[in-house]
Figure (cartoon, rainbow, N blue to C red):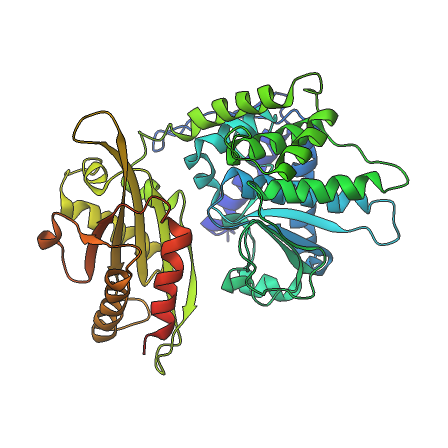
Length: 457
């Protein structure tokens, strides 16, 4: 009788063999065999810089240790889930420092940066793509560890790892609440998380990377012998500070001091600080605005920040609330949909929030219009609210929650929100407003809505 392996075993074995062949190829690019059923992705350029090579090997070691049951040896350095350049750079910088500053000690630290965005969302922020390319990282980002590459659910992994370091965020996401908080670096408001964390730094600066880089340099210079700081990492740090401080025009004195210290160690040491930071801001700023080709789904997810929020309801202890920040008006976004109609925008929004399991989604749009005289531009902001009933709450509760949030927004005198001009076309548990409070982005709107949700019964 002839023995046959199950099809899945054959496929896996073939795939494994094929992967090994690719790995053994002595080329600068990974070549893929064409498949008529798929669109061939662009070739992946191998990262040639020291920092890329370290990051890739570090990722490899983390996954090996996880597979061997040694997750408890690792510290995860993580930024916020928005995945901007500041958050990513701060996480990468501190992970590199933790490993290298302790490598010659009796208890070396294993640390890895975790980007809390999926790998295919990194390039939705074009400035990330440019900065990583300039720092000689791999084009396919296989030298970075992203949230969708974790081999275990965060809630489970959080119980096993040594702990987490939070950068560019004041509190960990709920799914990481089981992990000890070892350190915090943030340039926003202290919310009391991790009281025993060391270092625990909250300071008003333009870029969180400033705080991380300052601590890194202070500790580096105090070592008996300094470790190697790759120029690619130093240049990544300068880029993050530049774009967050508008080329130092919005910088604090601390941003300037740290940027100067970093510059003096980089390959740009002969450049003038102000000129180099302006150049970086121009380069990255142009890339940041290059998002006209993004569709509605990508616009919703490119800067998505969400988490569970506790409520006062005895039946529904927590709901999932998420925010997106989009630099287009709702009308402009509708024009990007396949049918170019209002219903299609809400269909895309519903598909996205269903995927991430959000009960409440809030799209914060911003755009500019010319004044009546055509000279001065006026900044306009929009709030688009949607509440679902198919995840944690039924129809009646969703209706009540929607009304609670709607009332909170409309009663806030500082916002002075006005109904969107097509409000009569909106469906159940959908609402949109406009307001002209220029600085009322997520940092202002989120606390208003979270307070309403927390008080909902």
